[in-house]
Image 1 (cartoon, each protein chain N blue to C red):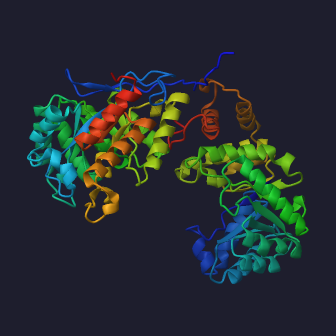
Image 2: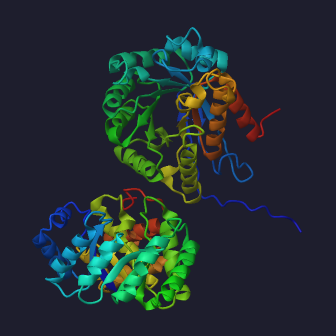
Image 3: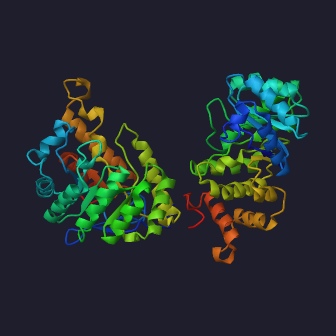
Length: 317
Length: 292
Protein backbone atom coordinates (compact mmCIF):
# COMPACT_ATOMS: atom_id res chain seq x y z
CA UNK A 1 0.00 0.00 0.00
CA UNK A 2 1.27 3.45 -0.85
CA UNK A 3 2.31 5.59 2.06
CA UNK A 4 0.54 8.92 2.34
CA UNK A 5 2.76 11.54 3.92
CA UNK A 6 0.51 13.88 5.91
CA UNK A 7 0.60 17.44 4.67
CA UNK A 8 -0.48 20.73 6.22
CA UNK A 9 -3.53 22.27 4.56
CA UNK A 10 -2.66 25.87 3.78
CA UNK A 11 -5.21 28.49 2.89
CA UNK A 12 -3.16 31.69 2.86
CA UNK A 13 -0.11 33.23 1.25
CA UNK A 14 2.50 35.70 2.46
CA UNK A 15 2.39 38.92 0.47
CA UNK A 16 5.24 39.60 -1.91
CA UNK A 17 6.90 42.90 -1.15
CA UNK A 18 9.46 44.54 -3.39
CA UNK A 19 12.24 46.23 -1.43
CA UNK A 20 14.33 48.97 -3.00
CA UNK A 21 14.16 49.93 -6.66
CA UNK A 22 16.01 49.40 -9.89
CA UNK A 23 17.91 46.36 -11.11
CA UNK A 24 19.00 45.25 -7.67
CA UNK A 25 15.62 45.57 -5.98
CA UNK A 26 14.80 42.51 -3.89
CA UNK A 27 11.43 40.80 -3.63
CA UNK A 28 10.65 38.99 -0.39
CA UNK A 29 7.67 36.96 0.83
CA UNK A 30 5.33 34.99 -1.38
CA UNK A 31 5.48 31.80 0.70
CA UNK A 32 2.51 29.43 0.50
CA UNK A 33 3.88 27.00 3.12
CA UNK A 34 5.93 26.98 6.33
CA UNK A 35 9.60 27.92 5.90
CA UNK A 36 11.38 25.50 3.56
CA UNK A 37 8.42 23.11 3.50
CA UNK A 38 8.98 22.88 -0.23
CA UNK A 39 7.18 19.53 -0.25
CA UNK A 40 4.01 21.35 0.77
CA UNK A 41 4.13 24.65 -1.03
CA UNK A 42 6.22 27.32 -2.67
CA UNK A 43 8.90 29.67 -1.43
CA UNK A 44 9.37 31.79 -4.51
CA UNK A 45 11.78 34.22 -2.85
CA UNK A 46 14.50 32.88 -0.58
CA UNK A 47 15.34 34.81 2.59
CA UNK A 48 17.76 37.69 2.11
CA UNK A 49 20.51 38.98 4.39
CA UNK A 50 21.06 42.68 4.95
CA UNK A 51 24.49 43.68 6.24
CA UNK A 52 24.78 46.20 9.02
CA UNK A 53 26.48 49.56 8.64
CA UNK A 54 26.69 51.96 11.58
CA UNK A 55 26.50 55.69 11.06
CA UNK A 56 29.23 56.25 13.66
CA UNK A 57 32.23 54.09 14.61
CA UNK A 58 30.89 51.33 16.87
CA UNK A 59 32.16 51.71 20.40
CA UNK A 60 31.41 48.32 21.84
CA UNK A 61 31.92 45.77 19.11
CA UNK A 62 34.27 42.91 19.92
CA UNK A 63 37.44 42.63 17.86
CA UNK A 64 36.06 39.71 15.83
CA UNK A 65 33.22 41.84 14.52
CA UNK A 66 35.37 44.88 13.76
CA UNK A 67 38.17 43.07 11.94
CA UNK A 68 36.32 42.46 8.62
CA UNK A 69 35.53 46.19 8.41
CA UNK A 70 38.93 47.58 9.38
CA UNK A 71 39.48 50.99 7.85
CA UNK A 72 35.87 51.75 6.92
CA UNK A 73 34.02 51.93 10.25
CA UNK A 74 34.30 55.72 10.33
CA UNK A 75 32.83 56.08 6.84
CA UNK A 76 29.32 54.66 6.30
CA UNK A 77 29.56 54.99 2.53
CA UNK A 78 32.86 53.11 2.28
CA UNK A 79 31.54 50.58 4.79
CA UNK A 80 28.39 49.93 2.77
CA UNK A 81 30.39 49.59 -0.43
CA UNK A 82 32.76 47.14 1.20
CA UNK A 83 29.78 45.01 2.30
CA UNK A 84 28.48 44.92 -1.25
CA UNK A 85 31.75 44.64 -3.17
CA UNK A 86 33.76 42.38 -0.85
CA UNK A 87 31.06 40.43 0.95
CA UNK A 88 28.31 40.29 -1.64
CA UNK A 89 25.64 42.05 0.44
CA UNK A 90 22.23 42.01 -1.23
CA UNK A 91 20.89 44.64 1.14
CA UNK A 92 22.31 47.16 3.60
CA UNK A 93 20.92 48.19 6.97
CA UNK A 94 22.09 51.59 8.14
CA UNK A 95 21.77 51.68 11.92
CA UNK A 96 21.46 55.31 13.01
CA UNK A 97 23.01 54.72 16.42
CA UNK A 98 24.53 58.21 16.49
CA UNK A 99 21.07 59.69 16.94
CA UNK A 100 20.53 58.01 20.31
CA UNK A 101 19.63 60.78 22.78
CA UNK A 102 21.55 58.87 25.45
CA UNK A 103 24.61 58.75 23.22
CA UNK A 104 25.98 61.11 20.56
CA UNK A 105 22.49 62.56 20.07
CA UNK A 106 23.19 63.70 16.51
CA UNK A 107 20.49 65.76 14.85
CA UNK A 108 17.90 64.55 12.40
CA UNK A 109 19.50 66.72 9.76
CA UNK A 110 22.93 65.12 10.11
CA UNK A 111 21.50 61.62 10.20
CA UNK A 112 19.38 62.22 7.12
CA UNK A 113 22.40 63.59 5.24
CA UNK A 114 24.33 60.40 6.01
CA UNK A 115 21.40 58.23 4.96
CA UNK A 116 21.18 60.15 1.70
CA UNK A 117 24.89 59.74 1.00
CA UNK A 118 24.71 56.00 1.57
CA UNK A 119 21.52 55.68 -0.48
CA UNK A 120 23.12 57.59 -3.36
CA UNK A 121 26.27 55.46 -3.28
CA UNK A 122 24.66 52.01 -3.43
CA UNK A 123 22.14 50.28 -5.66
CA UNK A 124 20.95 47.53 -3.29
CA UNK A 125 17.91 48.12 -1.04
CA UNK A 126 18.66 50.20 2.07
CA UNK A 127 17.06 49.69 5.45
CA UNK A 128 17.36 52.72 7.74
CA UNK A 129 16.92 51.91 11.40
CA UNK A 130 16.44 54.33 14.28
CA UNK A 131 17.02 53.92 18.00
CA UNK A 132 13.46 53.02 19.11
CA UNK A 133 13.19 56.31 20.97
CA UNK A 134 9.76 57.52 19.83
CA UNK A 135 10.42 61.25 19.95
CA UNK A 136 13.82 61.08 18.36
CA UNK A 137 12.86 58.49 15.74
CA UNK A 138 9.87 60.63 14.79
CA UNK A 139 12.20 63.54 14.08
CA UNK A 140 14.98 61.54 12.47
CA UNK A 141 13.06 59.03 10.38
CA UNK A 142 10.62 61.64 9.06
CA UNK A 143 13.55 63.72 7.89
CA UNK A 144 15.20 60.64 6.38
CA UNK A 145 12.00 59.85 4.48
CA UNK A 146 11.89 63.34 3.09
CA UNK A 147 15.56 63.74 2.17
CA UNK A 148 15.67 60.26 0.57
CA UNK A 149 12.54 60.70 -1.52
CA UNK A 150 12.63 58.33 -4.50
CA UNK A 151 15.09 55.95 -2.84
CA UNK A 152 12.48 53.39 -1.75
CA UNK A 153 14.04 52.89 1.68
CA UNK A 154 12.83 50.46 4.28
CA UNK A 155 12.18 52.48 7.44
CA UNK A 156 12.13 51.10 10.96
CA UNK A 157 11.41 50.54 13.72
CA UNK A 158 7.89 51.98 13.44
CA UNK A 159 6.12 51.30 16.72
CA UNK A 160 2.62 51.96 18.01
CA UNK A 161 3.89 55.05 19.84
CA UNK A 162 5.28 56.75 16.74
CA UNK A 163 3.50 55.03 13.86
CA UNK A 164 1.30 57.93 12.82
CA UNK A 165 3.95 60.50 12.09
CA UNK A 166 6.62 58.19 10.71
CA UNK A 167 3.98 56.19 8.82
CA UNK A 168 2.61 59.35 7.22
CA UNK A 169 6.08 60.43 6.09
CA UNK A 170 6.76 56.99 4.63
CA UNK A 171 3.48 57.06 2.72
CA UNK A 172 4.19 60.57 1.48
CA UNK A 173 7.64 59.73 0.15
CA UNK A 174 6.92 56.11 -0.83
CA UNK A 175 9.18 54.18 1.52
CA UNK A 176 8.47 50.77 3.04
CA UNK A 177 7.39 50.73 6.70
CA UNK A 178 8.67 48.15 9.19
CA UNK A 179 5.97 47.61 11.83
CA UNK A 180 7.80 46.75 15.01
CA UNK A 181 6.21 45.18 18.10
CA UNK A 182 7.63 43.68 21.30
CA UNK A 183 7.36 39.89 20.79
CA UNK A 184 3.55 39.77 20.92
CA UNK A 185 1.40 38.40 18.14
CA UNK A 186 -1.74 40.29 19.14
CA UNK A 187 0.10 43.62 19.25
CA UNK A 188 1.75 42.79 15.94
CA UNK A 189 -1.62 42.29 14.31
CA UNK A 190 -2.96 45.45 15.93
CA UNK A 191 -0.11 47.62 14.63
CA UNK A 192 -0.55 46.24 11.11
CA UNK A 193 -4.24 47.17 11.33
CA UNK A 194 -3.41 50.66 12.61
CA UNK A 195 -0.88 51.24 9.82
CA UNK A 196 -3.42 49.98 7.31
CA UNK A 197 -6.00 52.39 8.72
CA UNK A 198 -3.43 55.17 8.43
CA UNK A 199 -3.15 54.43 4.72
CA UNK A 200 0.11 52.50 4.44
CA UNK A 201 -0.45 50.39 1.31
CA UNK A 202 0.00 46.63 1.68
CA UNK A 203 2.92 46.58 -0.71
CA UNK A 204 4.85 49.00 1.51
CA UNK A 205 4.54 47.10 4.77
CA UNK A 206 6.75 44.51 6.43
CA UNK A 207 6.95 43.49 10.08
CA UNK A 208 9.61 43.20 12.76
CA UNK A 209 8.51 40.84 15.56
CA UNK A 210 11.56 41.77 17.72
CA UNK A 211 14.11 39.02 18.01
CA UNK A 212 17.01 38.02 20.21
CA UNK A 213 19.91 35.61 19.92
CA UNK A 214 20.43 32.12 21.28
CA UNK A 215 20.59 32.16 25.06
CA UNK A 216 18.73 35.43 25.30
CA UNK A 217 15.15 34.40 24.70
CA UNK A 218 15.21 33.43 21.04
CA UNK A 219 12.52 30.85 21.81
CA UNK A 220 10.00 33.62 22.49
CA UNK A 221 10.72 35.25 19.15
CA UNK A 222 10.63 31.83 17.49
CA UNK A 223 7.26 31.02 18.99
CA UNK A 224 5.68 34.36 18.09
CA UNK A 225 6.98 34.16 14.52
CA UNK A 226 5.76 30.58 14.24
CA UNK A 227 2.30 31.60 15.41
CA UNK A 228 2.29 34.56 13.02
CA UNK A 229 2.98 32.20 10.12
CA UNK A 230 0.36 29.70 11.32
CA UNK A 231 -2.29 32.44 11.48
CA UNK A 232 -1.17 33.84 8.12
CA UNK A 233 -1.01 30.56 6.24
CA UNK A 234 -3.61 28.31 7.86
CA UNK A 235 -6.14 30.82 9.16
CA UNK A 236 -6.01 33.31 6.31
CA UNK A 237 -5.21 36.13 8.70
CA UNK A 238 -4.59 38.81 6.11
CA UNK A 239 -3.23 41.24 8.66
CA UNK A 240 -0.33 38.90 9.38
CA UNK A 241 0.50 37.84 5.84
CA UNK A 242 3.60 40.02 5.72
CA UNK A 243 7.30 39.36 5.26
CA UNK A 244 9.28 39.29 8.52
CA UNK A 245 12.43 41.32 9.14
CA UNK A 246 14.74 40.20 11.95
CA UNK A 247 17.25 42.70 13.32
CA UNK A 248 19.52 40.02 14.70
CA UNK A 249 23.18 41.06 14.41
CA UNK A 250 23.18 43.66 17.16
CA UNK A 251 21.42 41.29 19.55
CA UNK A 252 23.97 38.51 19.16
CA UNK A 253 27.10 40.64 19.23
CA UNK A 254 26.22 42.50 22.40
CA UNK A 255 25.90 39.44 24.61
CA UNK A 256 28.47 38.52 27.21
CA UNK A 257 29.28 35.12 25.71
CA UNK A 258 30.32 36.77 22.45
CA UNK A 259 32.22 39.72 23.89
CA UNK A 260 34.29 38.05 26.56
CA UNK A 261 37.91 37.41 25.38
CA UNK A 262 39.20 33.86 25.37
CA UNK A 263 41.82 34.74 27.98
CA UNK A 264 39.06 35.62 30.46
CA UNK A 265 36.94 32.56 29.67
CA UNK A 266 39.09 29.76 28.23
CA UNK A 267 36.23 27.27 28.51
CA UNK A 268 34.21 29.23 25.94
CA UNK A 269 36.93 28.79 23.32
CA UNK A 270 38.01 30.98 20.42
CA UNK A 271 36.19 34.31 20.62
CA UNK A 272 35.95 34.87 16.87
CA UNK A 273 34.52 31.46 16.11
CA UNK A 274 32.15 31.76 19.05
CA UNK A 275 30.59 35.00 17.85
CA UNK A 276 30.31 33.83 14.26
CA UNK A 277 28.67 30.55 15.21
CA UNK A 278 26.24 32.17 17.64
CA UNK A 279 25.17 34.61 14.97
CA UNK A 280 24.88 31.92 12.29
CA UNK A 281 23.00 29.51 14.57
CA UNK A 282 20.62 32.20 15.79
CA UNK A 283 19.95 33.21 12.19
CA UNK A 284 19.26 29.59 11.27
CA UNK A 285 16.68 29.32 14.06
CA UNK A 286 14.93 32.41 12.75
CA UNK A 287 14.99 31.06 9.19
CA UNK A 288 13.21 27.95 10.46
CA UNK A 289 10.37 30.04 11.84
CA UNK A 290 9.80 32.43 8.97
CA UNK A 291 12.45 35.17 8.66
CA UNK A 292 12.40 36.80 5.22
CA UNK A 293 15.10 39.39 5.86
CA UNK A 294 17.92 38.88 8.37
CA UNK A 295 19.95 41.87 9.44
CA UNK A 296 23.38 40.44 10.24
CA UNK A 297 26.91 41.54 11.02
CA UNK A 298 29.78 39.13 10.43
CA UNK A 299 30.64 38.16 6.82
CA UNK A 300 31.62 34.65 7.87
CA UNK A 301 28.35 34.07 9.73
CA UNK A 302 26.54 35.42 6.68
CA UNK A 303 28.43 33.02 4.40
CA UNK A 304 27.39 30.10 6.60
CA UNK A 305 23.77 31.16 6.62
CA UNK A 306 23.71 31.66 2.85
CA UNK A 307 24.97 28.10 2.51
CA UNK A 308 22.26 26.85 4.82
CA UNK A 309 19.59 28.67 2.86
CA UNK A 310 20.86 27.20 -0.42
CA UNK A 311 20.96 23.70 1.04
CA UNK A 312 17.49 23.93 2.52
CA UNK A 313 16.18 25.20 -0.78
CA UNK A 314 17.89 22.35 -2.64
CA UNK A 315 19.99 24.79 -4.63
CA UNK A 316 23.48 23.51 -3.90
CA UNK A 317 25.60 22.13 -6.69
CA UNK B 1 -27.81 31.14 36.52
CA UNK B 2 -26.27 32.74 39.55
CA UNK B 3 -24.37 35.99 39.18
CA UNK B 4 -21.66 36.88 41.66
CA UNK B 5 -20.84 40.57 41.57
CA UNK B 6 -17.12 41.29 41.46
CA UNK B 7 -16.79 44.95 42.34
CA UNK B 8 -15.98 44.83 46.07
CA UNK B 9 -12.29 44.24 45.52
CA UNK B 10 -9.32 45.57 47.44
CA UNK B 11 -7.43 45.95 44.15
CA UNK B 12 -10.02 48.41 42.83
CA UNK B 13 -8.90 52.03 42.69
CA UNK B 14 -12.33 53.27 43.71
CA UNK B 15 -13.35 50.92 46.50
CA UNK B 16 -9.92 49.64 47.61
CA UNK B 17 -9.18 52.67 49.81
CA UNK B 18 -12.55 52.38 51.58
CA UNK B 19 -11.80 48.76 52.45
CA UNK B 20 -8.34 49.60 53.71
CA UNK B 21 -9.60 52.54 55.76
CA UNK B 22 -12.64 50.61 57.06
CA UNK B 23 -14.92 53.25 55.63
CA UNK B 24 -18.24 51.39 55.64
CA UNK B 25 -20.46 53.74 53.66
CA UNK B 26 -18.95 53.42 50.18
CA UNK B 27 -18.71 49.66 50.66
CA UNK B 28 -22.36 49.39 51.67
CA UNK B 29 -23.45 51.67 48.83
CA UNK B 30 -21.59 49.56 46.31
CA UNK B 31 -23.14 46.42 47.78
CA UNK B 32 -26.65 47.83 47.40
CA UNK B 33 -25.95 49.07 43.85
CA UNK B 34 -24.68 45.66 42.81
CA UNK B 35 -27.77 43.96 44.20
CA UNK B 36 -29.99 46.44 42.39
CA UNK B 37 -28.11 45.59 39.22
CA UNK B 38 -28.97 41.94 39.65
CA UNK B 39 -26.37 40.25 41.85
CA UNK B 40 -27.24 36.96 43.54
CA UNK B 41 -24.01 36.86 45.50
CA UNK B 42 -21.50 39.55 46.37
CA UNK B 43 -17.83 38.72 46.11
CA UNK B 44 -15.69 40.20 48.89
CA UNK B 45 -12.18 40.15 47.50
CA UNK B 46 -9.52 41.20 50.00
CA UNK B 47 -6.65 39.61 48.07
CA UNK B 48 -3.79 37.85 49.89
CA UNK B 49 -4.44 40.07 52.95
CA UNK B 50 -1.25 39.13 54.74
CA UNK B 51 -1.58 41.86 57.36
CA UNK B 52 -4.69 41.81 59.56
CA UNK B 53 -6.64 39.94 56.90
CA UNK B 54 -8.84 38.27 59.51
CA UNK B 55 -9.93 41.57 60.97
CA UNK B 56 -10.56 43.09 57.50
CA UNK B 57 -12.64 40.13 56.29
CA UNK B 58 -14.75 40.13 59.43
CA UNK B 59 -15.34 43.83 59.16
CA UNK B 60 -16.29 43.59 55.48
CA UNK B 61 -18.70 40.68 56.00
CA UNK B 62 -20.48 42.44 58.85
CA UNK B 63 -20.69 45.77 57.07
CA UNK B 64 -22.07 44.28 53.86
CA UNK B 65 -24.53 41.98 55.61
CA UNK B 66 -25.94 45.00 57.44
CA UNK B 67 -27.44 46.11 54.12
CA UNK B 68 -28.33 42.83 52.43
CA UNK B 69 -29.49 39.26 53.01
CA UNK B 70 -27.67 37.99 49.93
CA UNK B 71 -24.95 35.45 50.58
CA UNK B 72 -21.33 36.46 50.15
CA UNK B 73 -18.47 34.91 48.29
CA UNK B 74 -15.43 35.29 50.53
CA UNK B 75 -12.46 35.82 48.27
CA UNK B 76 -8.98 35.59 49.78
CA UNK B 77 -5.97 33.31 49.64
CA UNK B 78 -5.42 33.77 53.39
CA UNK B 79 -7.03 30.82 55.27
CA UNK B 80 -7.05 32.71 58.58
CA UNK B 81 -8.95 35.60 57.01
CA UNK B 82 -11.28 33.10 55.35
CA UNK B 83 -12.19 31.44 58.64
CA UNK B 84 -12.62 34.80 60.36
CA UNK B 85 -15.13 35.80 57.68
CA UNK B 86 -17.00 32.49 57.87
CA UNK B 87 -17.37 32.86 61.66
CA UNK B 88 -19.47 36.01 61.33
CA UNK B 89 -21.22 35.30 58.02
CA UNK B 90 -25.00 34.88 58.28
CA UNK B 91 -26.50 32.31 55.92
CA UNK B 92 -24.52 30.01 53.65
CA UNK B 93 -21.28 31.52 52.45
CA UNK B 94 -19.27 30.61 49.39
CA UNK B 95 -15.56 30.03 50.00
CA UNK B 96 -13.77 31.55 47.01
CA UNK B 97 -11.61 29.66 46.50
CA UNK B 98 -9.80 26.45 47.44
CA UNK B 99 -7.08 25.43 44.99
CA UNK B 100 -5.33 22.08 44.78
CA UNK B 101 -2.11 23.21 46.34
CA UNK B 102 -1.58 20.81 49.26
CA UNK B 103 -1.36 23.48 51.97
CA UNK B 104 -4.54 25.18 50.78
CA UNK B 105 -6.47 21.90 50.72
CA UNK B 106 -5.30 21.00 54.21
CA UNK B 107 -6.12 24.40 55.66
CA UNK B 108 -9.42 25.12 53.96
CA UNK B 109 -11.30 21.93 53.14
CA UNK B 110 -12.22 21.47 56.84
CA UNK B 111 -13.78 24.95 56.83
CA UNK B 112 -16.45 23.87 54.34
CA UNK B 113 -17.92 21.33 56.77
CA UNK B 114 -17.26 23.32 59.91
CA UNK B 115 -19.18 26.37 58.70
CA UNK B 116 -21.65 24.60 56.41
CA UNK B 117 -20.34 26.62 53.49
CA UNK B 118 -20.05 25.94 49.80
CA UNK B 119 -16.72 26.16 48.03
CA UNK B 120 -15.22 27.25 44.74
CA UNK B 121 -12.80 24.54 43.64
CA UNK B 122 -10.12 26.38 41.73
CA UNK B 123 -8.38 24.05 39.30
CA UNK B 124 -4.93 25.35 40.09
CA UNK B 125 -2.66 22.46 40.95
CA UNK B 126 0.56 21.95 42.84
CA UNK B 127 2.30 22.65 39.52
CA UNK B 128 0.30 25.74 38.75
CA UNK B 129 -2.08 26.37 35.88
CA UNK B 130 -3.38 23.28 34.02
CA UNK B 131 -2.22 23.34 30.40
CA UNK B 132 -5.30 21.88 28.72
CA UNK B 133 -8.71 20.32 29.26
CA UNK B 134 -7.26 16.93 30.21
CA UNK B 135 -5.13 18.39 32.99
CA UNK B 136 -8.20 20.18 34.28
CA UNK B 137 -9.92 16.78 34.30
CA UNK B 138 -7.14 15.29 36.40
CA UNK B 139 -7.40 18.16 38.87
CA UNK B 140 -11.17 17.95 39.30
CA UNK B 141 -10.92 14.19 39.87
CA UNK B 142 -8.39 14.77 42.60
CA UNK B 143 -10.44 17.57 44.10
CA UNK B 144 -13.61 15.45 44.29
CA UNK B 145 -11.62 12.68 45.93
CA UNK B 146 -10.03 14.97 48.52
CA UNK B 147 -13.30 16.79 49.18
CA UNK B 148 -15.11 13.47 49.59
CA UNK B 149 -12.57 12.46 52.23
CA UNK B 150 -13.40 15.66 54.08
CA UNK B 151 -17.11 14.85 53.93
CA UNK B 152 -17.90 17.37 51.20
CA UNK B 153 -20.31 16.29 48.46
CA UNK B 154 -19.99 17.24 44.79
CA UNK B 155 -23.04 19.52 45.14
CA UNK B 156 -21.06 21.79 47.42
CA UNK B 157 -18.23 22.27 44.93
CA UNK B 158 -18.37 25.09 42.39
CA UNK B 159 -15.64 24.17 39.94
CA UNK B 160 -13.63 27.08 38.54
CA UNK B 161 -11.81 25.90 35.38
CA UNK B 162 -9.84 29.20 35.19
CA UNK B 163 -10.49 31.69 32.42
CA UNK B 164 -7.40 33.16 30.74
CA UNK B 165 -7.25 36.42 28.79
CA UNK B 166 -7.88 36.04 25.08
CA UNK B 167 -4.84 38.18 24.38
CA UNK B 168 -2.56 35.84 26.30
CA UNK B 169 -3.26 32.27 25.24
CA UNK B 170 -6.09 31.35 22.93
CA UNK B 171 -5.55 27.63 23.49
CA UNK B 172 -6.40 28.12 27.17
CA UNK B 173 -9.58 29.95 26.17
CA UNK B 174 -10.55 26.94 24.08
CA UNK B 175 -9.43 24.42 26.72
CA UNK B 176 -11.64 26.05 29.31
CA UNK B 177 -14.67 25.67 27.02
CA UNK B 178 -13.76 22.11 26.16
CA UNK B 179 -13.44 21.22 29.82
CA UNK B 180 -16.84 22.75 30.56
CA UNK B 181 -18.38 20.52 27.91
CA UNK B 182 -16.97 17.47 29.71
CA UNK B 183 -17.75 18.56 33.26
CA UNK B 184 -21.18 16.91 33.73
CA UNK B 185 -19.72 13.55 32.74
CA UNK B 186 -16.55 13.64 34.79
CA UNK B 187 -17.89 15.46 37.84
CA UNK B 188 -21.58 14.63 38.21
CA UNK B 189 -23.36 17.00 40.55
CA UNK B 190 -20.58 19.57 40.69
CA UNK B 191 -21.58 23.15 40.09
CA UNK B 192 -19.39 25.61 38.23
CA UNK B 193 -18.26 29.19 38.19
CA UNK B 194 -15.74 31.37 36.36
CA UNK B 195 -14.02 34.69 36.86
CA UNK B 196 -15.54 35.90 33.61
CA UNK B 197 -13.91 39.31 33.25
CA UNK B 198 -10.50 37.71 33.05
CA UNK B 199 -11.26 36.79 29.43
CA UNK B 200 -10.94 40.48 28.54
CA UNK B 201 -8.06 41.40 30.80
CA UNK B 202 -5.70 43.64 28.80
CA UNK B 203 -8.43 44.71 26.37
CA UNK B 204 -9.37 48.42 26.19
CA UNK B 205 -12.10 48.96 28.83
CA UNK B 206 -14.87 50.07 26.47
CA UNK B 207 -14.50 46.91 24.38
CA UNK B 208 -14.34 44.39 27.23
CA UNK B 209 -18.12 43.76 27.47
CA UNK B 210 -18.24 42.07 24.04
CA UNK B 211 -15.67 39.50 25.07
CA UNK B 212 -17.27 39.00 28.49
CA UNK B 213 -20.79 38.56 27.13
CA UNK B 214 -19.87 36.32 24.22
CA UNK B 215 -17.70 34.05 26.34
CA UNK B 216 -20.50 33.86 28.92
CA UNK B 217 -22.93 32.66 26.26
CA UNK B 218 -20.41 30.08 25.06
CA UNK B 219 -19.91 28.82 28.62
CA UNK B 220 -23.66 28.84 29.31
CA UNK B 221 -24.07 26.51 26.36
CA UNK B 222 -22.19 23.95 28.42
CA UNK B 223 -24.30 24.49 31.50
CA UNK B 224 -22.29 27.08 33.41
CA UNK B 225 -23.94 27.34 36.84
CA UNK B 226 -22.65 30.75 37.93
CA UNK B 227 -20.13 33.43 37.07
CA UNK B 228 -18.28 36.19 38.85
CA UNK B 229 -19.07 39.20 36.70
CA UNK B 230 -19.15 42.93 36.18
CA UNK B 231 -22.75 43.24 37.31
CA UNK B 232 -22.98 46.80 36.02
CA UNK B 233 -22.95 45.49 32.44
CA UNK B 234 -26.74 45.48 32.08
CA UNK B 235 -26.60 43.69 28.74
CA UNK B 236 -24.58 40.88 30.28
CA UNK B 237 -27.15 40.50 33.05
CA UNK B 238 -29.92 40.30 30.46
CA UNK B 239 -28.03 37.58 28.62
CA UNK B 240 -27.60 35.62 31.85
CA UNK B 241 -31.32 36.01 32.62
CA UNK B 242 -32.40 34.75 29.21
CA UNK B 243 -33.56 38.13 27.96
CA UNK B 244 -31.40 38.16 24.82
CA UNK B 245 -32.48 34.97 23.07
CA UNK B 246 -31.61 36.19 19.57
CA UNK B 247 -27.97 36.90 20.48
CA UNK B 248 -27.67 33.64 22.41
CA UNK B 249 -29.15 31.80 19.43
CA UNK B 250 -26.65 33.40 17.05
CA UNK B 251 -23.68 32.42 19.22
CA UNK B 252 -25.02 28.89 19.67
CA UNK B 253 -25.50 28.44 15.95
CA UNK B 254 -21.95 29.59 15.37
CA UNK B 255 -20.72 27.12 17.98
CA UNK B 256 -22.46 24.47 15.89
CA UNK B 257 -20.40 25.51 12.91
CA UNK B 258 -22.73 27.92 11.15
CA UNK B 259 -20.97 30.97 9.69
CA UNK B 260 -23.59 33.58 8.83
CA UNK B 261 -22.46 36.23 6.36
CA UNK B 262 -21.62 39.35 8.35
CA UNK B 263 -23.58 41.47 5.88
CA UNK B 264 -26.74 39.56 6.80
CA UNK B 265 -26.42 40.55 10.47
CA UNK B 266 -27.23 43.73 12.32
CA UNK B 267 -24.24 45.79 13.41
CA UNK B 268 -24.64 44.52 16.96
CA UNK B 269 -24.96 40.90 15.88
CA UNK B 270 -21.86 41.23 13.71
CA UNK B 271 -19.88 42.26 16.78
CA UNK B 272 -20.92 39.07 18.54
CA UNK B 273 -20.14 37.03 15.44
CA UNK B 274 -16.66 38.51 15.19
CA UNK B 275 -16.11 37.85 18.88
CA UNK B 276 -17.14 34.19 18.53
CA UNK B 277 -14.58 33.79 15.77
CA UNK B 278 -11.86 35.22 18.03
CA UNK B 279 -12.85 33.15 21.06
CA UNK B 280 -13.11 29.97 18.99
CA UNK B 281 -9.53 30.56 17.84
CA UNK B 282 -10.44 31.07 14.19
CA UNK B 283 -9.36 34.66 14.06
CA UNK B 284 -6.41 36.03 15.97
CA UNK B 285 -7.23 38.62 18.61
CA UNK B 286 -6.15 42.24 18.25
CA UNK B 287 -7.63 45.31 19.90
CA UNK B 288 -9.36 46.07 16.59
CA UNK B 289 -11.10 42.69 16.39
CA UNK B 290 -14.59 44.24 16.20
CA UNK B 291 -13.68 46.23 13.11
CA UNK B 292 -12.04 43.71 10.85
